[in-house]
Image (tube, rainbow, N blue to C red; front, side, top):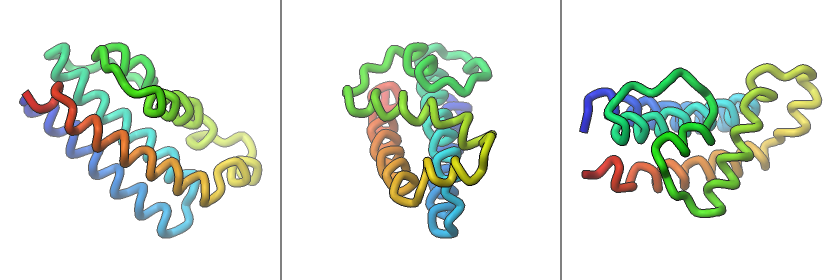
Length: 130
C-alpha cells in the first residue's frame, strides 16, 4: 500500500474520532461536516490505490466513488448522497438556527453511526487490502 494511501486512512480515522468528540460536546453541525471529511479522505485512499495517483482536490463524494469504481450497497450509496448534499449547509450555514434545527442531535448521531459503518466497509474493501 502506498504511503499516501496510509496517510488518507489515518486522516479519515482521526476525523471520525473528532466527529465523536464533536457529538459529545454538542457541536452538532460539525459532527456532520467532519463525518463528510472522514468519508472524503477514506474515498481518496481508494482513489489513490486504484489510480496510483494523488486524487484531485474535490469534496464531491459521488465523484470519488465513481473515480475508484466502487460498487456500494444501495444503503451506503444513498447515505453518501445524503451526506454529500449536507456538506455545504453544515460548512457554511446561511441561517445558523435553521441549520441547527435541520441537524439536531438525533440526525448527527445517525450520520455518525452511518459514517462509521461505511468507513469500516471501505477499510475492509479489497482496494485497500491487496
